[in-house]
Image (cartoon, rainbow, N blue to C red; front, top):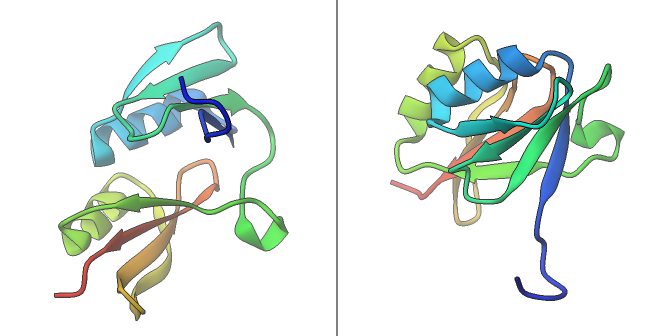
Length: 117
């Protein structure tokens, strides 16, 4: 492990089973449970996990925005919709790429970005 580097991220989830199913279906993540109120995600690009909580993570309330990269932005957007996510912001361009924002089934806000076509 490297000292002074981001090592792990934790996010709230009102329903661990629902969030696990969503991220498994949309992004192919795996999970390892640690008791009934915590699950670590695997194959997500960064180590982290979900903890059982009755609140959610939103940038509007001061939380950090976790941004995922995907080569097929339109495909990712469709997978999010099919799996029960809510599109918070449709695909838009920004300097250096395009992205969209979505809410997972527990209400956490995420973004997915891709390169300009």
